[in-house]
Image (cartoon, rainbow, N blue to C red; front, side, top):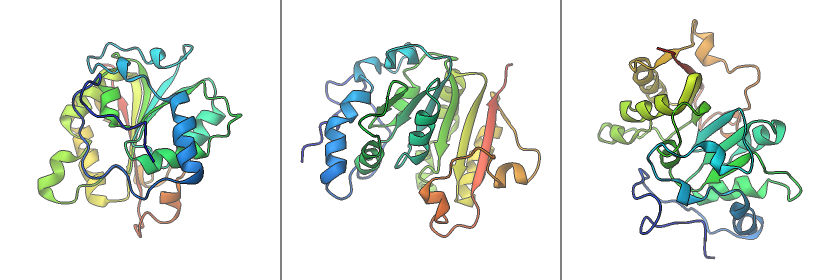
Length: 244
């Protein structure tokens, strides 16, 4: 099939992306292919708004203004995002997932009768959104189980680094939250050190339970529930943007 949601850099509103590897696995068929064709256009962010100059207010993605805007970068199959936007109609959710199969799985679970006024998505690199929206505009940023890039020479590809943390600090409101998880101990340590060393962020943790036990209202994904590929420990890292 032809995936209309895939965009090349040529002639687009943005010219750079930091994605590596394939964007599609098995060919899409049935409900997933139908959802990609029919539902994605209804909630897809207009790429003309993505100028990567921090001048696009997130309200421009939606038909009305909200008081609370949250961004999830790399939402996988979107189980959390699906439950959140359906349960909280007064919160605006923005999600980015570059991999076609993940996006299609998310879309196929949205009932045709479900209001989608508070959800917008991009099937591309979420940093494009982060670089485009205005400063002090987001309440929360979620980066859950990102690619660990195990080899040392690939560590520069990890999404949590000082350059990206500068961007997150810019677009989060004062006291806004950066929420990260990983089942890879090395990556969890990396993310914690990177964020702790950034002057804009303060770690919420005050005990071991603070980062090894999820909050009471946490929505676990299938990935977490099945043991995260055999891992016994999931780290939950909550950082607040300080007001200094």
